[in-house]
Length: 151
Length: 290
Image 1: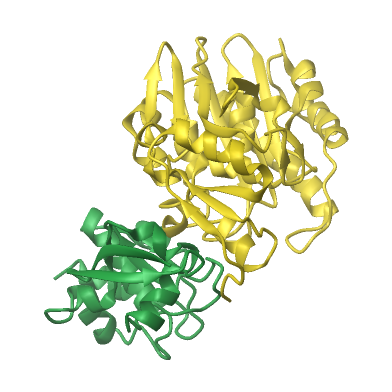
Image 2: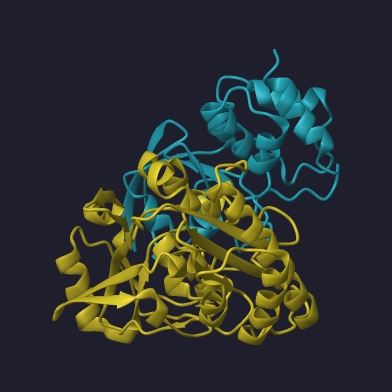
């Protein structure tokens, strides 16, 4: 076990982890942060996305020990003081049905809008191309991100 | 799926410590950079290293440098960093163009170009570009530095000539001094996580010189020297392209797998080669959209 210290959703956390534990496992099982989901568990689906130092990453492909000294933000952190604009827009556009992919999509969309507040439809598609959704067929998700930039 | 075996984790702060660890552990250690391949392989028990050496704590391996007309890309430089780099945009726009075809943003934020060639899958997107630029792989071990030309790098599917005690510190790419234009044509099923079903990179020079390399249509990515030899000195016409396409078919040896059939890959290589060649010629003449 090694002790790691990192910022999780604006709070400093110190925890013992084994080298083989992934960030996703530690977030969900040890720290109770349940928004990142385990979908494919091999970096293909985007359900486990979190922001690491402001960049979206697959938490299933990162060892927890790697985030020592770094900053992790999940949807819990994004919506700490109420829903973000893009989250509100997802609701307004009925973007999700089962919701399993939602946290990962929100992470990808948040990173996009942080870097590029007025993306084109093509840029939105590119930013979300690593997020699989099996319910709503993507269109309402794309529209939600687009609408979030209009207000 | 969890990683089912234990290992020790090391995060050295300099290259010297990293190569000393490698010297001590050899084959039982694996180098960790972005982890987008390695962590999957550990989950699937394809890799069961006793030690993991995380090189992200080594500052010099994060550098993108352009000095004496040579670009250095450190082993920890991610595809996202390549896409955002002004140096790359200015001198090597083809590297940016290729990087944008790799997986999705979230993977590009972690995955590195050096990791891509160290994994050495036949479909490695970085490979054709590095091959047409005649890049060098820089490896370090306790016995010193070794420069490996990229054309000698790939030894088989997922195999390279790197020795267990060696660490790749980066890639050096000389900037061609003659006016040139380049492209990377990639065939995928959808944007996002897809691997190349076939890929071809072409560099065309003002003096009617051509460099061509491909990936995913043979056991290793490689240059199409016979096609280059045929094209060199020639002005491109439809007849020349047709002849070159026939030659190209003899240089590739695609397989049928879950992503595409042999016949489809062979046919598409011809289509992509023609498309790419026409594109670079247009660019050389000052037109085109890139």
